Length: 516
Image (cartoon, rainbow, N blue to C red):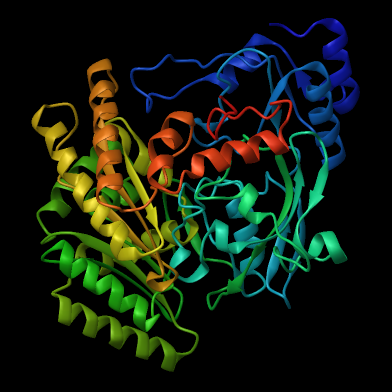
C-alpha cells in the first residue's frame, strides 16, 4: 500500500517536509540486501515512507500516528545487519540518525547518556579525553553506542568493559503504543545512574537474551557504564585508512597474538587470563581474522593468511595489556608470559615485532574499526554460527561442536576451506562467553541452501547438548524451535508482545509476533 495524501501530510507535520520521503529511490536504499544473504532477493519489501525524527517527542508522535492509522513502524539507528528490514507492506521506517547527541558524560559516577545515533567511535573518543573508556560493539565503531541498540552488545573490550546487557543503566523507552516510559532511577529521580530502581525494573521485558531488534517500541536515550582508561587521551595515529597506525605504541601497552597446540590449551589460557584479570582485551582471533585486520587489499589479505597459516600451530587468540603503572604493567606481562609457558602458547612475531603492524592492530582492535574487513571481502562473505552463554566454557564447547558441521560444507565444496578455527571470546574475565564459527563463501543458491541446513544442525546441537539459547535465536521460527526446550519462554515472550503492543504497531518479524 502507498501512503495516501492525508497520511503523508500527517507524518510531514510531525518531522517537517525535509525529513520524510516516500521516493522509491530513497526507500530502495533502505531495503537493499548485501551479498551476505545469498539466495534471497536483493531487496526486501519497501517501506511506505522513511521519517527522521529529531527528539523523543517526535518519536512519540510518529508511533501514536502509526497506531491510529493501522500502520507498523520499524525504528533503527545505524542500520547494521538484516534486522532493519520490513517484511511486508504498511511499515514506516523511523530513521534515528538525527538523534545523535551525547547528553552527558558523568566522570564521577562513570556513565554516559547517549541518543541512538551516537556511534561507538564518537563516544569512545570523548571518553578517552577524560581517562575513561566504553565498551565498543564488536560489529564496529560505526555502530550505535546505545547499549540496548546492539544485538548482543558483545565487543572487543568486553573482557574489561562488559557488554550491552550489563552496561545498560537507566533507559528512556517509547513503548509500541506511544507511551513514554523511563526506567530505573530516571523514572523516580530524573538521574541516570541505575537501570533497576528505585522501584520495579522493566529491563527484563525490553532486553532478554538479545534485544527486540525493532520489535518492541523505540529506545530514545540510555545510559551506559564507563570504565577506567589508562591510555593516552588521544592515540597518535598516522596515515590514511586503510593504511594507518600509531606512530609509536604508547607506554605500558602490549599486544600479543598467540597460537596454541589445541583448543583445550587455548581454552585453558583464556581462563587463566580471566582468573588473573590481566587483559584489557582478549579475543580468540584466528589467522584469517588477523590477516583481514592487517591487510590493505584483498590480494594482501590472501597472502598474509597463507603466511600466517604456516606460522601458527593451532587455535589462536589476541590479547592486549594496559598497565596502570610501570609496576602494574610489569606484573601483567610476567603473568602473561607464565600463562603462555604453561599452555604452550606461541607468539606470532610477524605481528608483534613490527611496531607499525603491532601498532595498527592495537588501534584497530581497541577501536573496533576493522570488523567490516572481516565480514565483506571480494574473497567471499562471512557467515556462521553465533554462540553466547553465561559461561565461557559452555560457549566454547558449543562452537567447537558446530565446527564439525562446517567441515561437511567444506567437503561438499559449498564454502571455503579457510583453515580457521572457531572464534571464542572471554567476557568479564570469563564470567560470560561469546563465540562465532567463521564461514567464508561466495553467494549462490546452493550455498545458501547449505547454510540453512547447517543452521538446522547447529540448532539441534544447542538443544540436544543443552548449550543454552545461542545469540542467533530471533523470529517466530527460531523461538518456536527453542521455546519448548527452555521453560516455554516463547509463550511468555508473545504475551509480553501482546500486552505492550496491542495494535501490533511495532514490526516484530525479527523479534516475535503475536500469532495464535
